[in-house]
Image 1 (cartoon, helix red, strand yellow):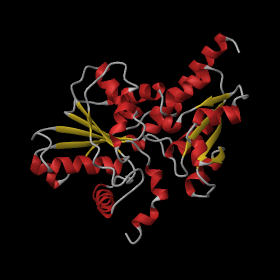
Image 2: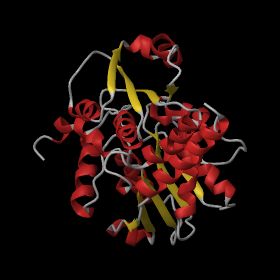
Image 3: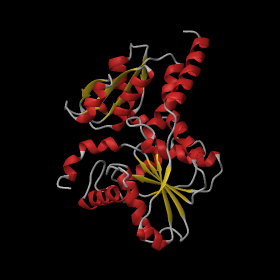
Image 4: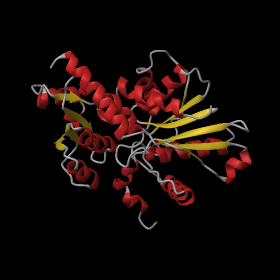
Amino acid sequence: MSALSNEYKYKMLNLHMQIALEIFSPIHPWQHPMFAQKELNVFIKRDDLIHPLISGNKWRKLKYVLLKAQAEGKTHLVTFGGAFSNHLLATAAAAARFGFKATGFVRGEEVQNDTLFLCRLHGMQLIFVSRDAYRNKPELFQQYFGQDEQAFFVDEGGASVEGTQGCAELITELPTQYDHIFCACGTGTTAAGIIKGLQQHQLPSAFHAVPVFKNGEFMRNEIDRFLTVPAPYHLHTDYHFGGYAKTTPELISFVKDFVSSTGILIEPVYTGKMLYALHNLASKDYFAPGSSILAIHSGGIWGLLGMKDKFAGS
């Protein structure tokens, strides 16, 4: 394939994607009596509204990955995730939308669930592998698709430099400057992207990442590896509720109260933990009175499909 044809396809896909999937991510106020008492102005950027399946940071992280794959003449996206992975579902939907073949390596024993049903419905082939084999994703890719010249490696969660590029664009959509910006942290890509965006526009907003893993201090390395220029930020590691996809009755109660009082759907894996952290810090007078705070709703609400039992009786 010639360089000229690659360039042409790159431009055409870019145009197609911009028209077909325009960003729609409004900012809504989060009104709460405690915030009023503390004189805080809190807002939520609704990235969950970008697309029903390719929502939130999933679209932002995939956008330039897809462009790179198309520019290199690749037609087959190969990626990785757990049985309830929002990333697998988003990749399956994006592949169907933009004309790619898709394969997903699924961590663990073969199962059937709503998320994987939707992945298959969008044409994604699923390969279940042991947790040990899953740890070496590049090796899995080479083992199964090393001879496939059309195959393109997409890391778990869309973690990549291209992913940070898409997430950095979020900053250009903000109508005003905020004193604090919060987001949940899973791979570090979204956090690094937002930090890059703040750097590019020379904005002094304090950035806060809330890891969803136990012992989440390791996320600092994951974020820093994507930063060309070091930057200060806050890592709040005390809001994991036992670890990834773990919950407590307190967290579930918070999610239920938030959804029923705001009409904004969240889940307890990512955004629920981040919003709990913000609310808890505010209750402890972490923020100065008069502060403006923006929370990024990074989508991922399909994670609720794997946690329905936690909400039993609600």
